[in-house]
Image (cartoon, rainbow, N blue to C red):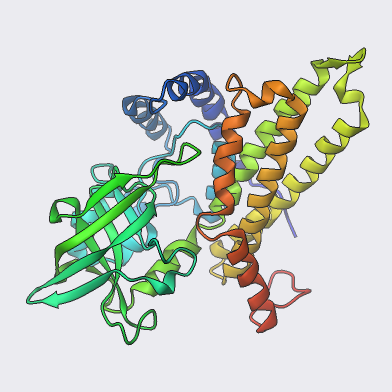
Length: 389
């Protein structure tokens, strides 16, 4: 069993780390100033310029197949890169990628949606969550009714990431109420100019989701993504494919914050000596390191299973649950170590505190992950005491 990275993988990791430290971290004060003033943080053009710099370095379409101009680095390296990107709160992501289920489209759909998205000309969003169907995605109520050569969609989606910026949506609607999730849900590619509307949803963090409203939105038959009635399978593929990426970013954020706490503890004096010399602080640092390392290897294991073509759903649920809880515990300790300064907006800790709280909710709450893990064990879908199986 070899846990080492190849020389090429180490070079990629180190290059990404240097890019983050040289190009992205210096923008953090500007982001904080912009957000304190009620703005978006960074001008979109700044992020676009960064993506172009990254593209010149060869970082474009990290996990996109080479035939589409991507780097195709694979799940494990994608997770490692996500850990490096998690070290900063600047909302940057590499360009050249598209939602995994768009590859299931027809050649015409790929021409109209997939390729332009990879090239950065179009922006998509994934819409399955509804006001009454969050973790229970099988309970969606949005309906699509056949009318001639079109499908007419009516319903509402909520907490849709990228919904305010997207020019097309992958929307899931019930096309056969009797079958429901078992063959009665279909995914449609709906352009914004087909009539759906979006409204921003204010949140406690910087995540800016949207509410999407569909009122008699007409979508042509050829805009069905995948097969009629098999949309729920596509939805689960989308949700499950990248679930390990959430704890990956959490690991990077937690490592960065823990280092901040270590550095601060060495210089913050209390009762005549650095607080780093007090056992209470040492234990918070030690516990955080242990939890970060555990989350890191659970995450890489889930990514490895995906890379090997193995069923990674159980491992991804474990990694997501563990990583989300870990990040929240670490940021709480880091804020505590910083005391009153950690609670101010002068430092990014309180921002991370708000931002990381989301990890325990979206793409499957803690409770849903626990339900999934327990159900897999109770039904025999997963077994204890297995290694590499």
